[in-house]
Structures are given as structure tokens and as C-alpha cells.
Image (cartoon, rainbow, N blue to C red; front, side, top):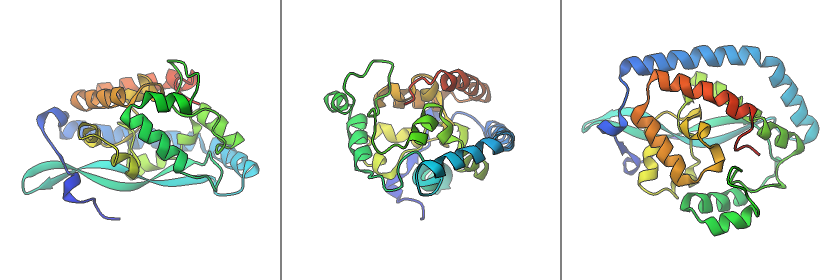
Length: 246
């Protein structure tokens, strides 16, 4: 699939262009080194997860999904960010015949900030808990464990090696999510997407879309190699304590 149309181009202005060539080179080097080490160290874990998924539900162990990412590009008018589709990988956590309609409904409520609908989808939600619907019947037994431990995200290390993603950056949206975005929300695509990010370590799915965008844009405006290292360090306790995870 080719780049999206020119109507999806995001202007590359000073507020969103923090970090020069040296930063991007260092960031890419960090991505390759860390992703390679983690993939080698987790090979036994990959094998165990694949077996657990296969024993729990028929279907592929790896789930591939089209997501959108921002890519720096040059045009006649100067530099810009192009919105481009790519294939993101995860360990499958839902039944192979799972319907995507419930996620569309949830995202429509989440992006628009429809608190009444979100409460109906997750009754009794506490402030520190995820906005995502609880006890989703589409999620398999193995999938619930993988989600709680954030292990379903491990195959995205392959996306990092391919250059589709970085270790740190805003999470990549689905195409139908972008259709729901306000204009300001699209600015979060002015960065390569990440496995973890400033919004993830500050609240993950327990914060609303407006706060997620605010934190993503804060990261884009302030990004630096030291900030990336800080976010990676903060990700460890967030994952271990399962903050904002289901």
C-alpha cells in the first residue's frame, strides 16, 4: 500500500522538529542494539508463548495488523511528515475469529471523550484502571496473561529492527482511529511510533485520549536521547507493576 494522500501530510514546524540528525542516528543505533539483544535473550520465551497460544486456541500465534506511522519526507515546500501504513506484529491474544466491531465502538468513545459510553463499556472503572472494556469475551485465556504482562508486544521488536517503529515514541493508530482524530490529534504522528512512550509511562490506557495526545506532543517537542533513555527506564516498573494493563 502506498503513502496516503497529500491531505494527510503534517507540516514540519519548529515545535515538532526537535532533534537533529545526530539525535536520529543515535536513536536508531539504540533501537537496533537493544532490539537485537532482547530478541536473542527472549527466544526461549517466544517459543513458550507460541506453544501456549497454539494450545489455547487454533490459529496463528503472531497477529499482524495494519497501523499508521509518521515518516520524515522532503517536498517542494520543505520538510514534512508523511502518514504511511505499515504492518505491526503482536502475539495473538484474541480468538482467531474475533469481531473488530467492539474495538471500533470503544475507540469512537475513547477518542471523542464520551465518558458516559466508556463507563457503560467498563462499569465500576476506578481512576487508575484501563479504559478498555473489562472481561472481553474475545480474549483467550493465554491472551489475558500476555496482556497483563505486556508480553503480547514483544514481536514489535521485529518492527523496530525493520525501522517501522522505534523503542520510544507515540503508539501507532489503526487507520479507522485516524478517521476519528481531531486535527490536533494528528500531530502525534509527527514522530516514528514506539513500543513505549511518554504517555505509556505516565498512565498508559488509564488516561483519556486528550491527555495521551498532550503527553505525546510534549515528547515530540522535547525529545532527546536522554529523554528516550529515561522513558525506557520508566517502562520497566510500569510493566512489572502492570499499571494500566488488563
